[in-house]
Each structure stands twice: as structure tokens, then as C-alpha cells.
Length: 545
Image (cartoon, rainbow, N blue to C red; front, side, top):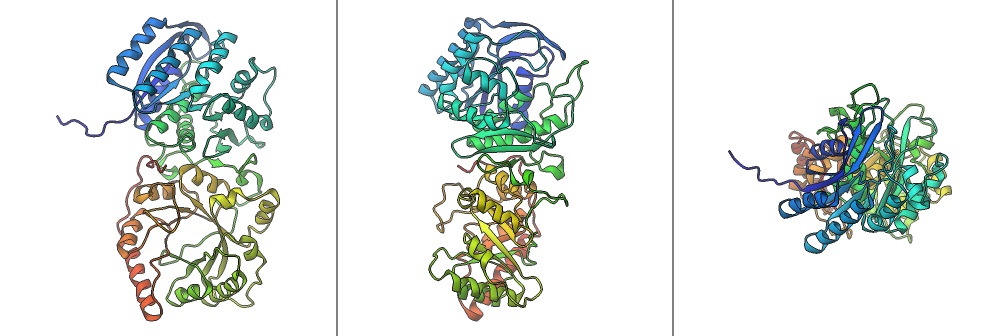
């Protein structure tokens, strides 16, 4: 027998035992297995419950809980801890002391707090005012992520349960208040879109914030949804993802678990987290959620799309050679078009001289029937004089980075959306949450990068490589363009196996005249060679920050 050389990260689940097998430690274990981490169940409370109600809750005494944690710390130290039903002030204080000790003695330990205050099925309460105060004082300041539903968020902020439902517009402020109490990141779960077709969670993290929308799964069986979600977040953190990426992956796992929920008893049955949730919708996995900008809903939820297309803007047609050239000025753009490229981007950062380069680029693309994208200067591109005559295939597009996207004000968004049928829109993405945001904007294509280390930009992200590129391709609702660090034919040949609609070349486009034409042909042949050896989608993307 051979030992598995891969040792998965350890996640402690300190929560309640659900005798019905739906929530608590049962759901935690299923989520850990689906995410590929090693889950350690630690009983903090015993419950008597079925699919209808909870009839009894008994917190585990402090000595027994401490013995469980000490045994694990001696042999299975955690990369992350997820707490659920804790049941008493003494339990909460003990968990807080263990978090402090582990963080002093070992590598940083992520803490995900699911503040379970009552059972969704009803019955005896899980928390009183003293427990709520202990959560606020002891665990929130130590939490990496906290995952309350709307009522729990209100109760933690205001010290008492709400008297009515929480309006959507109040949720971001609740999340920010919980952050002010010490939680590094907050996800307030629950809530529906206006049409009832999507569920809405509010994401508040150091890297990203906004409404996270996913299609609602029509099922009566939802027992353990919150536990599954929080445990998946903890697993994502243990695997090295930042909170925003871990939350998107957890949302996908929870959606998949709801898709596979089943009846168990006469009441709501359990959700069933399973491996394969992130293999992509075509392979039976969960769809990628949409992330909005600021406090606005994702554009996909606010703009009519009668054709039910995955994009809001004009569709992107990948070039036959799967090459996407990026150049800095009009003369170079004209040269690469003459050399044979038919998909190009003008990335002219300076405002000075932009008009001349833009006119030259539009004329050259129109003459050759190429798709032309203008980077950053979207207003100038929309205001440019259209060509009077074009060859077949000419289309104008815009390309924006995530920073440019976030800088758009309400009027700018309205202008862009009003022109969506006229222009294509490409958006950059470097992480899972940026992919979700680009999808929520209804982009024509989404760029995945950097594929390899690059000096073109100062990048805080690790290279995506072929594996993450393939994961992007499997989950993006629109074509994916790979970008970053592709300098040689061998680089293109290797990354063409990732299945992207096109691969971007920047510094690889050197030379002039016949030399440039020969260079373009070498790059085209390399892409064609690699396309014959497509690789499979990994179960999860690797962390990028």
C-alpha cells in the first residue's frame, strides 16, 4: 500500500450534532469532502431534532470540548476553523482562547463564524442575549469571515432580533457594521431578486464587495444550507484562496448541494454537497454566480435581455487563428493587421495623440475586416467617427480592466449599456471573484491572466497557468481570452491546450515587414498545434493571491 503524497489541509468544524443528519457537523463533513479538505468534526453541542423541529439542545461541557480540541491540536492542527452552533458563553470563550493560542503557536489560522442563532426548522432557541453578546465580543474580532443571514446580522449589530424582515438596501450597512466590530470579511446571506429567480448575498471583503447573485434552485429541501456554505468558505481559505474567491466557490458548492438535495423525513430534507460541483455547468457542476458593482445589482439583473443570452453586449467571434494582438499605437496596429492578424487591441495609455492613433486603428481595422478593441479610452472610442466603408468582419469593441470598471459612475454605466448592441465589451479578470464580476456585467468576452509571469504590468497575482485557464473556460458564460506572459511559440503551444477562444500576444509581436509576417505565422502555427491537445478542467482553480 502506498501513502497518498498529497496531504489536504485540515479544517476543524466546531458545531452542533444534528440527529437528522442535515445540518451541523453532518453538513460540514459533506462540504469538506466536496472541497477536498480534511474535515475534523468537533461536537460543541448535542441536539435532538428531526426534519420538522429542534426539541432539545445540550451544550457540551467545557472540559470535554477542550479535550477534543487539545487532541486535534497535538496531531491535526488546522489551516481553518469553522464554528456553527456553540450553545453557551463558556463554549464561545473557550473557542476564542484556542484561536489565539493556535495563531501564536503555528501558521495563521482562518476563522469562519457561522453565527447560528436559531434553527430554520424552528423549535427551541439556540442563543440568548448573553450568547449573542459573547459572539460579538469574542469571535467577531477574531473572524476572518462571518456568514450571518440577514436576521442574524441585524441581531449581532443591534443586540436583539429584528421585528420584521430586513430590506435589501439596509444589508450593506449591516455588513460594514460587522466589519467595524472586527470581522475581516462578511457575507450576509439570503434574499431574493425582484423577479424571485435569483438569490442575493452581500459580499464585503478586503478585495471585493457587492451583491452576489445566483439562480434560485426550486426545491423544498434546504436543511443545512448555511452550514454547507460556511464550511465551504473555510475550506476555500484553508486551500489558500482569499476570502472573496472562497465565497464565490462556496456559493457554487451550495448551489450544487441544493441541486442534489433530497427528502429525509416529512419536512425539509438536507442539501447534499458533492465533489464535482466546480466542473462547470456542462459537466453537471454549478453555474458561476454574478457579482455586482458597488451597491448596484449585477447588470445582468437590471438590463432587459429578451434573448436570454449570456452576454449583454455585442457577441465576440473568436478569430480563426485564435490570436489576439495587443499594440501600443496606430502604425503598429496597421502593421500587425497587414501581417495577418484579425483581432487586435489598441492599448495606447497616453491621452496625448490618442485621436490620431484611434483614427488610424479604426481605418486599418475597417479596411481589413478585423475586430478592433480599444483599451481604457471607451468614451473616445464611442465618440469616434465610424468608417464609411468596412470589409466584412469589422467590429468595434471596448476593453476595460477591473479598476476602470469600478471607476465608472452611474452616468457612465448608463452610457455603456445604452450602446451595448453596437459594441463588444471585453473585461479583464485575474481571480475567481473578478470572473464572477465580469460575467455579471454581461461582457462579450472575459480575459484570464496573467497566464505566465509578466513584466508588462506590475501584477499582484500568481500566474494562472493552463489549469486555471481551463477552469475559466469551463465556467465563463462567454468566450475566454488568455493573456499575460506569452512571449514565444512554445508558450502559445502550451497554453492553447487550455481551450481559450484566443490567446493574447504583446511583446511577441516584434519585427517589421516580412519578418513580422513570418513571426505571426509561427505564432499561428503554434496555437494550431496546441489546440489538438486540450487538457481537462481541474476540480478547483489554484489560488492566485
